[in-house]
Image 1 (tube, rainbow, N blue to C red):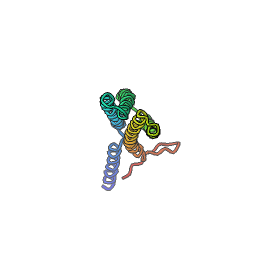
Image 2: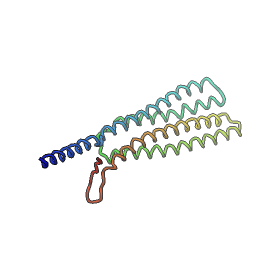
Image 3: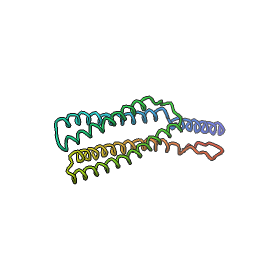
Image 4: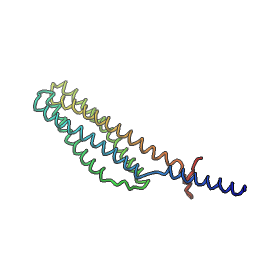
Length: 197
């Protein structure tokens, strides 16, 4: 009777461990689907910003004069590039497969996050150049330099916030993925999975 009870308890523990392991597997397809959705939504936001700036800038540069005209002109010109980036980015992201291995998934997160950090540095540079142009325009009483400078500060500021938010969202997702690997250990010779009870 004791042997049967011990065998029953052992089988139950093994079954519970199996169920626990099944519930904590990493669903890479779902993670990649979420990553692709997040990144493509980011491109839609960038595209929406670009379209609104193209429309407002196009109308603004024909309806205003002085500094405002050049402000709107630079906004429209700047956002033709943003629209192209958003379009190509969206197309590229939507065509990515969700069928990726673990290392590919981590690499996709890592590469995207590196690009966003690099872009954030560029955004700071855009704002600095804009501040320089604005200040120089004030000294030389040049409406074009003032308007272009103000526009570059606005566009750089938006892109900095955009890149920072997208980075934080991506980093949050990739951190969860990496944390889920805490139970997996490799000592150079063997791979083991620790299942806490």
